[in-house]
Length: 482
Image (cartoon, rainbow, N blue to C red):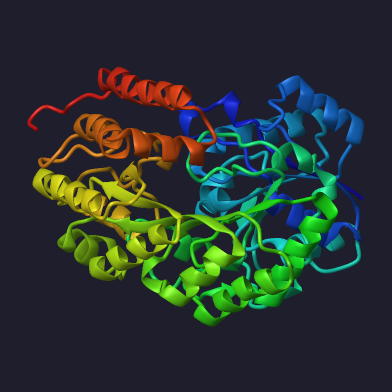
């Protein structure tokens, strides 16, 4: 049996290229590792290699797979996934087709509206895919959970897969099936959290999140129960990456590196004791789980960057609308300590929650600026289905209940409220990002170094960001009556 797993080329259909980035298809590499002994499996990253429709057709004609699986992360990327499946159906009418990824887990009914899709994987698919492959080979039963499928032209819903409790039992991702050096030796975007030392790898150390932030889909995607890989298992993976692929830096790519404090301490100490200390970055860190002992070990093990998720500088917004247990006094203390240790600190801030006033938005930015982080990452709120924010927006009449998630932008404002408009948020985001982050030559130089660019290139990025916001302004209508 032959299986081809595909990352679609999202450039085919994206209307907002700024939110696209190339990333190592870790999920497909993990899935491939689960079925390598069951079948011939290959991975095609059509996005990273910018493959055309005809390129995909040629691959399908050459490989002649029995099953093609397509992964899509966000709803905004879904059209390219469906185009890919349509090509499979045209070229190989008898080939089975499957859709997976966050998009599918959150919207399986929407996925199955596409008659070209045979299977929709709902939840964590590692064991489910293996069961399906064995079944298609005639060596096992069809998965009891985690796959929606068609039977007599009707969609049969088999729920979602059980969460994998022991993540240490999963194999190492099959990076030998992709052009790993292509991902490890370059950064697809110029951002503060991109690698600056190559070769670089990303580590996913846990799944699930117990905090339940109002804007986040993680509870739907991977559950509220925190499931962490053991420190020993993570250290073994780092050692393998260093020995097998010459990795010289890391990015920890999950939100809950510090949720289990002892696990984090064991991990950082292990990196030091096992000679695995190297430059590493922490993305979307839960600052309320940090303390001085962890920061000391983080610095010694090579940490150069921490992105803390503050979300809002306004107490009412954090407590009533966000739901993240951030204490600004503790956060300020930890930010100062991180910076004293020479660790670059970025902070995430979201603007435009339902019922948030213009004055609260301005106050939030003032408070965040006073935290004196190295960099502020400003976001406008993106309503996502199956979140509290989505329900708030529908209840207030800010979005229709049947609106498609793909209609929302990750770079510009989305909501028109009596308190603010999408156009106002778009302009405010771009110009406050520029004002706060580049107020001195020292800050500009530090950020340029973190982005691995020159001051001149950084200034070009600033100019492009401001002007894109101004261009977008004419495209965003302000409804009558506001």
